[in-house]
Length: 342
View 1 (tube, one colour):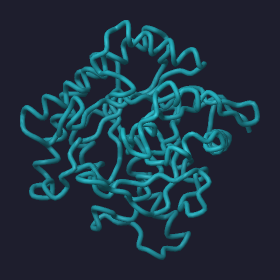
View 2 (cartoon, one colour):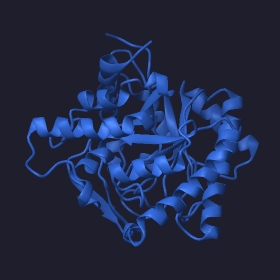
View 3 (tube, helix red, strand yellow):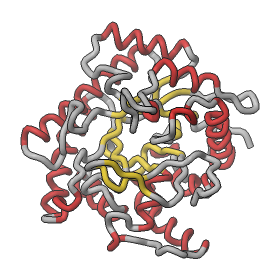
View 4 (cartoon, helix red, strand yellow):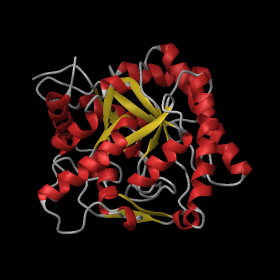
């Protein structure tokens, strides 16, 4: 059955994450990412919009109103809208650790404030019609977190609450990305504890990514919360998947379609982060359509209007290949056909 919702978005940050000038994989410009997205087509269907990373080289978080309106015009010129925005909360961008000292936490809140300003401009322009602002703890120190889990989770929660008040004042919601590299968010159980500590469900929720949450099941970075062991059966997988999604789905306000081959990719302090794979990767562990259904149950009632593909760390050659995007769009259309709504 063909549905009109959720809208289908492509992420812009795969052109930036893991990319570095002077290497074989330099950043891919916003203009080029928009061209690649707009060119994708499957059975007459195209991407409806993009989700957008608010940092250089795609966007200066301190860009003038006129520059941001120019970007909005550029996106709209490709018949694309803007959905969720990624706040620049990490050290080296605008923000810093939500678990850090007062200066670090103030920077984190400032990053959300800047994201809300940009969201307002895009909203008033008309190019943005929905979506959330994505955050995480911006703290890679999982061992540091373990020194005092309860106190450190509360510290992160207090920072999130400050940021949430700013978001609420601007009519925005914050979605905390579930990924195993973020302290206090590195397991399905720990992120539930954090969200409950924040206790602002109308403003702060969860962003589920199929690739990252698969690693929650396996207990990477939190063996004590593993729901599966290597060599698991299909029945064991779906039982574990239900346990995880039953706990996190009520909090889920943003959703990423993705694939994972069961391995992790880490660099520097960014250790053991979820590895995205092509939608048709023969080593992919996930039935993308079936897994998506667990997260999208009741999605419209939670305010989800679109879903987004996430495929970080893909080689530039793969990103520059039109068939890559057609394959992704085809997978997303199958998700919408199975679980969408009007």
